[in-house]
Image (tube, rainbow, N blue to C red):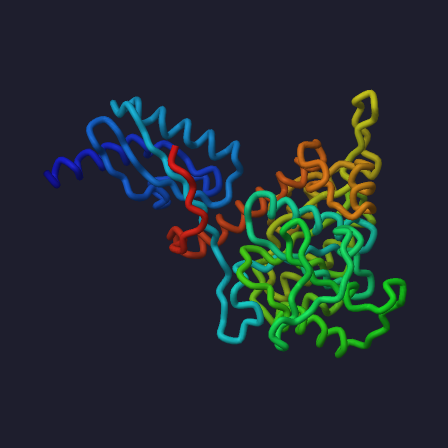
Length: 368
C-alpha cells in the first residue's frame, strides 16, 4: 500500500519537474516548494509555496501544474497556495525583532521623487497582501504626512511603546507627526538625529511586519550609517532619474552602501519618460540612466516609472496613486516594482540559505 502511494507521489513530482518558480527561476520540485502531495485514484492534492509572485504569475503556474498532471494521467488537481516570506537575520539586540525585512529607499540627491516612490512602493506591497510599515526618516523634509493625508500625535497604550499612525492598512511614523508646527524647520545636530532614528525603530510598536520601508533623506549623510548600525538591513532600493547629473550622485550612494555592507536590492528609474496625448513617448531626461546604475551596483533594474501628473495630484491630495487609482497604468508600474522587489529578496535569501525553502507558514490560501 505504502509502496503504491510512494510510487504515485513520485509520478506526480516527476510530472511537475518542468514547472518553474517565477521567483527563483528553477523547478518548484527542486526548490522544495511542492508540499503535502496525496493521490487518490486520478485526483492529486498538493500545496504549493509561493514566494511573492503576483496573481497573474500564480495563475500561470497553476495552469502549468494542472496541464503537467493531466499529461501524466491525473484527471483532477486540488491546488492549495501558501505564501511565505523570507526574513533577515535578527540578532538579540535588534530594535524591531518582529519585522522580517527592512528596506531602505535611497537617492544620491534630492528632487528625484524618492519619497513618492517610497510611499507608492509601500502602498503596493500592502495591496499585495503584505503587512507593511513606512518610516519617514527624512527628518529635515518629512513627506509622509502629506502623501498619506494624515496628521496627528502618536499615542502610547502602555507608556513604553509609541503606537504608529495607520492609514490604508499601512503603519506610519514620521517626525512630521510630532512637530507642533508642520511648517517649522527641524534644526538638529547629529546626536539628536541619531537618537530620533533609534527611537523611531525600537520605541515604536511596529508589531509583526513583513516589510518596513524606510524613506531616507537624499544624499550620503549618516542616516544610513546609523540605521545599518542599529539593525540588520535587508537592503536598499536606489531611486534615480535618467540624466547624468543625477547618476553621479546615485553612484556615490551605491558606493556608500557597499562600504556599509548594505545590499543594493535594485534600482528604480523615476520620471523615466512621458507619453503625450497622441501616445508618443518622450524621454525628457535622457535614457538608460537607471540601467547604468543597476549595472554599477550589480543589481536589477526594478522598473521604470513614467512621468504622470496623476502621481503628483494624488500625493498632494493625501492618497498615493497606487491606492487612489490602482487600475491605472502608473499604479501598475509601482505594483510591478513591488512585485519585482519581493522576488529579488526571496531569491537572494534562497541562495544565501543554500537553496532551502523558508519554514514559517504565511497566509494559507483556499484550495481550488
